[in-house]
Length: 249
Ligand code: NDP
Image (cartoon, rainbow, N blue to C red; front, side):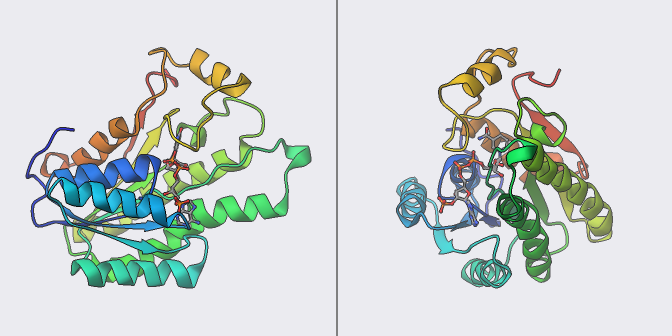
């Protein structure tokens, strides 16, 4: 992993930092000098492993259990992170879930769960975090190319949550510009994590759609998050950055 000190002195909160893309982002922000808090839903062992990896590399990190879909839990997690870190300069809303049902099989429960984690969690979490974010802070939302495309049957509700993420990002960028808080959305294509298939017909279909011929690595999203969190992104707000190996060309 490349390292720098561009985030020295910064405090970063990454939701869903126990596994996958969130874990990679937490490690990368720490490698660039930030002190990091991560939240997780239930996987304490994975959260502890992320913290241990950061500490072994000489960084500082703390893990906090907080269910993004539960308003009180999400607010408490944000407040706990702000108090452990002494503020939040960089907020990365990464926690997310994906469930795939075609419309005639879809359920109220799945709709509520996906919108609860992927959208409501961001809305509650950002409002809870704002008092802790200084002017000039950064908010990075992890959306998906599924917010703009429907690559296979059953992706409608997940895609709708990610379209909502893009909308929140644009609107918050405008709302928070007066405070020089920059808000941007990263829209990954298929990335090799627990959330994405690693074999089977959907995997075969997805791979066939990627011009670069492979799934991305979580670290390739983390590098972009570090860029958007850092000084070189000082004039970037309200944008969506697609990182998908060319899938949506
Ligand atoms: P993973 O399934 O690998 O990890 C999900 C993370 O989110 C875990 O840390 C998990 O915690 C956490 N999480 C899940 N539900 C909740 C909840 N209710 N409250 C708090 N945390 C929760 O997923 P990815 O790393 O692949 O995905 C990260 C983000 O990237 C998501 O927003 C996803 O939609 C998006 N994305 C992923 C793509 C991919 O191909 N992988 C493509 C496009 C977007 P725990 O370990 O405790 O379960």
